[in-house]
Length: 498
Image 1 (cartoon, rainbow, N blue to C red):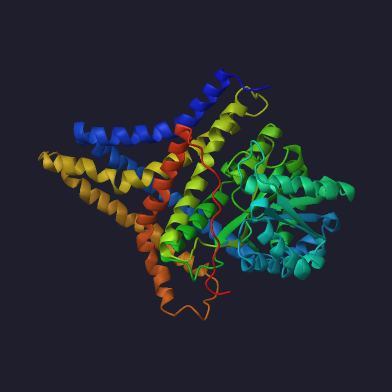
Image 2: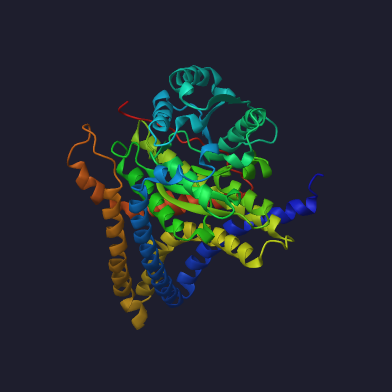
């Protein structure tokens, strides 16, 4: 049945709400800075104080998560998993969607799958291409199949047709198409769905040698494993020594955000490369083909399908991916902006969740509220916090000084804010030190002094928060608000030394 005009209007209101809230916040901050500057100064002090408290407990989460990461990355998961009942029955179905990626990037990923501490004959690899790039893709796929295909349980090559009505070209529609073809193979082999674990990877994903063993161990030991997705840590280190410093700061910041989220699984969504039960994937009808952020939406689909009985299990073991890098700095900056805008477009999950939560009394209210609040508040803070702290926070002070307002609060605010910023530097310094320990070995092509730059680059963190945080996030919410829907933009993969 087609949606009614009334339903369309209601859904559009939900799409408008996040962006409208952000722009209303900016409008009020600017107008009140001229009308009641002292009020805004008090607000900014309270806001910064609350944010400082938030940074403090996020730093605790980061340090705790980092400790777990160091411990679990060095465990012998394979020895622990192979003795568990059901281990020999498991098949790992791995999707690698690609569109115009260089052969070297795909080869590195497949080569990584042959170097793991896990039986390669238990891996069902699906290399997913696009019809728009079919000639190039099939040439590369044929080489990959010849070199790696016989090492795996199965090596399936799929080509997603272009121009399918109702689809948004991108990772979601590509893997959904490939997923249905893989299902046909699994059905022909009579493999129970409960024995298959799906991993949806970006094509530049290089797995940790123990990743599939760690995944298998958790799948075989956690309660109700077919009602959970499994989220590893994304560490952007494949080309980190070659990429521009601004891209490195953005990439490491993303990893640190994921680390803090891993410590709060009750609010965790799937992100980027992740794993899930094949049974759940089939039950929800595979990835949605008409959206941009299929990586987080697939969790929401499972949550709704099972009336809230679906969760994300954090895995403190890394998957290595590329930082954003192109042949020129300008293109790298543009691609970084587009990637952050696409990630921020995950706010499209908010109206979808409200729409499907409403009237579903089987999902506990507390769960519905928590996920809705975290989605909305997270996007709102992504857009507004850096701008309020670093830019708009200075406006009421300037107005108060221009009007020669002598209230003690306006005179002392710069000193108060300076003190808060100094305290917050502790968190920034901790992040900088941790980032050094996440780096892969320095290649011979990288000069020794670049170690110093890896530390100094963090002084640009406030710049990246605004240029590659607030601005693209605000554009993403604004596009949804205006109905100027975002398409899927494939981030270019480039290597200087191959």
